[in-house]
Image (cartoon, rainbow, N blue to C red; front, side, top):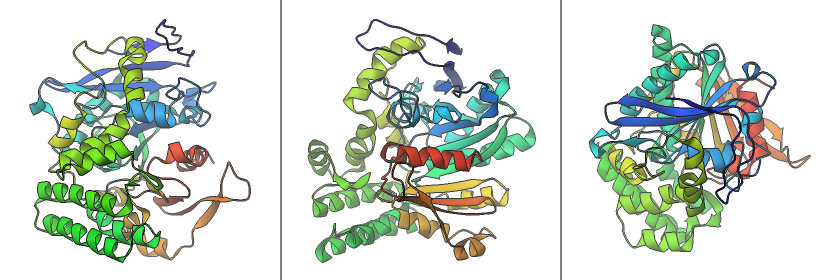
Length: 432
């Protein structure tokens, strides 16, 4: 059941500022599977004049309602201070803890966790059908899906399922496009380019490049043999090799180093569960955020079951999806483009886990009929909103496909370059 909140004050030791109109709730997407969503209406005299954006986090197992909300694009940061680059200034924003088991979403048993992106998309269709049936004021408003990391892989599958559902009339919404940020669309293209990217930025020497390349080839072999769980394990091993040869480069931003404690913990075990726990889930559930979500935010929401801990099932979510983790979804992007869906790819210059050159490789594999023309086009520079006269990004668009190269940003673009991310949002959603 959805809950509405307009003003909130709690004596919890945290000061919760007055916010605009919000609503949230659970949807039972399957028996034993409960998905949580949280909507912020746009900060505008009329929210109907602005688009609706759904934000999907990565992992799988990262919380949109937690990390995406308080660390990246929501109205408040983790100190509960107003965010100057909040996307709520330019759109109504829907955060969904997806897949089930992520964030405040939960399952009654591990058997109810999702196994692949097809199952993820099916669950999201149930949630979106319920959402648009109840929030009828959003049925005609342009609806965009923005995503990050593995969230982009899920967003691709969700967008295709949504396109079909809208055509059939089973979901009433004005689906306007999908934006894939530093997204795990073609995992192998990412892994195979880690070595060359790090070598070109002087973070690997010849010996290190040889070691990383050898490890990446083992991932490729597993993928080509269709052994996807083995490929996920080899992916983890390759990450260990990268860390050992770069003195702990941060996979989310190559100009920083991995947290020393987390790195040592991950290097103790070559298994993929270790990599998941310490590299790609733990940073999304850092202690301060966990305390916020399991403390004052939980109390504010008032609908979280007593037996549910925010982020409590995150590791199980990743493990359950491990057989699907290394599978590409480039074919889904082709289907979206062929169906006329607006697709945007955006990537951070300093990201390693999903490096830009890997993204460019899978884009060149598209069967889209506009690819040749797109490839021949010259990109356009965008000025950095925070540094007059400095280039902050490049972009290129042709027909229903666009690519944004975001400079001085890592994996979490809104965190690293908030003003540029906000401008990109406005451009993608046709506000400028």
